[in-house]
Amino acid sequence: MGAVHLTVSDLERSLAYYRSAIGLEVLEQPARRASLGTGATELLVLVEEPGARPALGHTGLYHFALLLPARRDLARWLAHAARDQVRLVGLSDHYASEAIYLGDPDGHGIEIYADRPRDVWEGQVWSRMTTQPLDVDDLLGELDDPASEPFDGLPEGTVMGHVHFKVAHVPETIEFYRDVLGFDLMAALGPQAAFLGAGGYHHHVGANTWESAGAEPPPPGSAALRHATIVLPSAEDRDALVQRLAAVGKEPADAPEGPLIRDPSGNALVLGHR
Image (cartoon, rainbow, N blue to C red; front, side, top):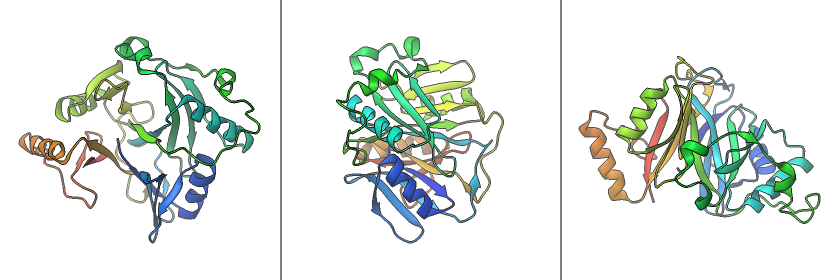
């Protein structure tokens, strides 16, 4: 997955949050818009729309998930959050990964996580992926002294690990991401949630109906997901996918960032490439 684009109601407020609480750098800031990331890697784009209201109860973004390079990086981030009183909404052990959850000033969900070694979970995602309380003491044990561990922002090598959507219907979502786009179904929780990935990864895309069953996409003027980005290995792979989509009557629209498609719940996806 690539950069996630969001509408926010107050750009300066959001920039302050993403810099100080999350630890992202501002890469570019043209008028009413900002690109954030680590090093030269763009992870998030914020577009200001004054007065935009949170898109609660609608399909759209459940959370975007920033994958840190190592468990120690996650421990360092958690120590920073504790010292600086960053408000959290959850801390979970998913067997394949350890995750910390929070929300930005507009209600956009955020996950910051680190994967366990791939040989621990590969081939066992369906049977072993779970949600248990995070062992905070064990995680902070990665650090010599959590109270004084320096935090200078998220490390280079941080990537957009996955994007989790609120959808209207999970079976239709599985058909689209698996049968049309080509992801593998890695795990499912009946009709309520599904997790899909590529290359054996536990998931690049999550989908659930927990907050959106039967809901419509958010109305114009909402602080909402503008689009997520799916990154193909090459331009040839991206073009082949575009041709395949067109052949089944789902030809992407032209967008400034690249070909744009929508899933059955209206969530926008831009097709990019490395």
